[in-house]
Length: 199
Image (cartoon, rainbow, N blue to C red):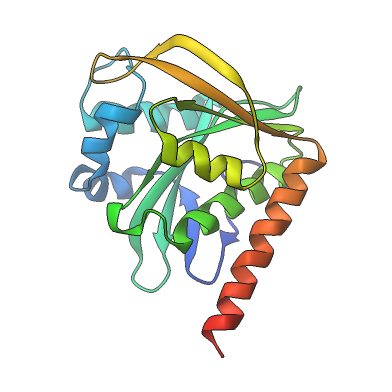
């Protein structure tokens, strides 16, 4: 199972590999502002097109796979998430490059995206899924810890961001059966929420 294979969907959204068809939507979204505070500096420039080009190139090189979260009801792109530095031999990958439309942050959409990303990692037979998050991004850290990830430590002054600042990165991970268990717990929450809304 490839990380970018089709078939990732829930009742409200689907994840599909990022491609050129998403470029215009991303250009006019809040992802442009988000880039400055949450994306690592890349050699090809600090503009949104450079980041989109970088993301598309990762998929071709096998160094990552950015997924677009598309809402089923209106086919609108509402978020992005990526598998970074996948290593098939050692069965590990990171999840990052996360962006969600501002008015949907803290909503059920977050659980749906996390569930689908973990589902694909599990299908890919990952033994380790990690997140490297800016220590300043307390909301994202809390969201990952909420699904059961262990905080392993801090990589001090590790990464320069697009705005020129240097970030201390908090390392969190799920390993082994923790990946399956977190995926299952999120799936149960999603199903319960759907059942409650139908009663």
